[in-house]
Length: 194
Image 1 (cartoon, one colour):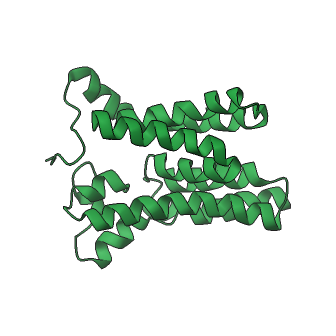
Image 2 (cartoon, rainbow, N blue to C red; image 1 turned 60 degrees about the vertical axis):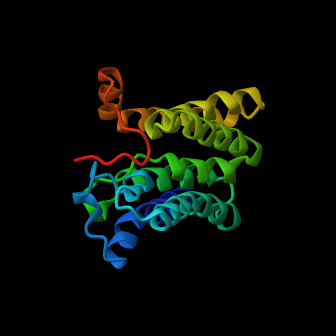
Image 3 (cartoon, rainbow, N blue to C red; image 1 turned 180 degrees about the vertical axis):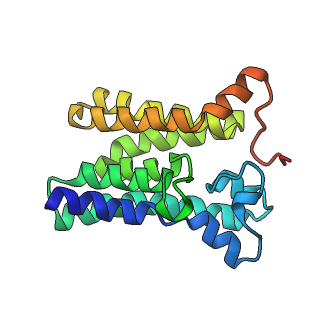
């Protein structure tokens, strides 16, 4: 049962929709009716509440990190299942009819907990591209893609299959963004969307 428990703990943690909760508590409305309708920090930023966006990013990161740390302490050797559960929970939460976020922040928390040097690579790619290009989707997809590559370079081949699978899901969740990128219509961070 430990594998199932790790998966379930990860899923329950990952499926907490912090963006929706924080915006509702702050009186900023239903996040799913704002901007892109996504529940992540980038869309929270479209409410004009930078503090809420930062809190959403941090909490989404922490739930991925916590899932791995809890599994390491209570269910050793099942960390990757907890990580997968947290990521799937964030992207496909039961409470929101399986319409969740795109997983970039949660994946960063997962990577940091699984192998902190790799987490630093992820953060550098994500934040570096975000600062220079100011296009959230490009930075997020590049960071996700850097995770399995970085794991291989750092000799953590045991992490490559999981991180490859999660990176592919991140890209899949960004398929509408990819279409806008190809059309030259993808907004920069901070730009308002109708």
